[in-house]
Image 1 (cartoon, rainbow, N blue to C red):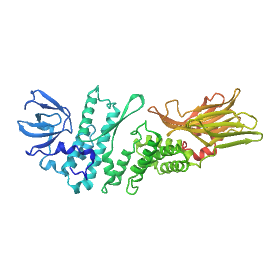
Image 2 (cartoon, rainbow, N blue to C red):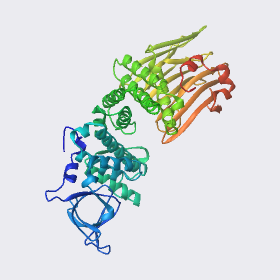
Image 3 (cartoon, rainbow, N blue to C red):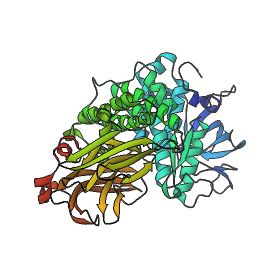
Image 4 (tube, rainbow, N blue to C red):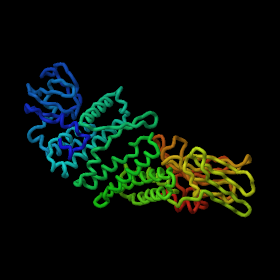
Length: 507
């Protein structure tokens, strides 16, 4: 195999597909659970079950069977001729292998066979072919099939392959084993409820991006595969997350916009929105990184603005909602950094909010009033407290703040005066473990009794659609809600002008 043209992930292919000195022929298994029998008869005992895409060596033939040898199992036997594809003559030509790969690539459940055909193409193609459009197409198919196989395993929870429970689990386990024998690597990450997300490591896609012959669509597909949001280590440290998000942003920047179909331009822009939004949060967690976080947040909003809604495919609509939620979660960071002290006054009434460093790397907000010697309220948090979002109602009895505890989750803090003094309540996007979403202030209703807010979230595998809500300030109970702000009179009359100008909840 040519190490200068083929990826390191395919290093094992040569050993499987290299013809033996005795002119034996390599063949690919075409059917799952093809029986490797002890003799050239259907009634002969089965010594092993072969799976689509496996490579065996043909050493002879008898009746309607090939005599083969399986190097992985170190076992010989007989398999029916209709169950294998000999890679010899015209069938072994790169053009023929590429044509077969194009057909198999479209068939769900045949990923391991497609991987075998792609590996065979890599082995048989010349240096010029590997550097040309055909080689890029083969590598693109190889990566796409590996990614699709990993997604199938994740959806069926078959990543727990040590104890397969169904025939589907067994098939996926076998096909993943075939992929591993061709040198493809997979990573697994634990998700909610103990499920596992299996992800292709991506070496082939990096090769596609590096080859000059790759088309804009192939580069876009490779970049999207390499920057998947669900294929990342949730236990990464803040510095590792910062490096990861910067790398992903750089990968997406390499995708050429010229010549890219609107469908793929939208997908790249949606991914850029998500990545730049996460990068903004990661940078904001660093010391003296305010300008960098502001620039990254602005890039997220700019990427979302490039999305053409009319060109969104049906399957991309959830991604569009997710990108909008991510951008909305970090939109306050796109503004110039707010002061650590903000004030409000109306007549003799005044409130001052100060943001002070905590003792353990956190931030503490302290609320003061000119009428009180002691602080009205003190609360500390490791989240990003956006002082620029500080809003006080006309009566001076309640205030709100936008606080981002994670990269994709923004809460609304409500500070309000009660009979027992000032207290702070946290209103999350939804009552669930933090995922993706926002809860934001939308306006005050005169009288000091009601608050307008909006929520939208995707958490614990469920999407909670946008909800425009009128809350009672005393109990924080929802008095009225609707999916359309125009259906609520208070939103038509009292919606905050700054919210209407900057929020993405009105998209």
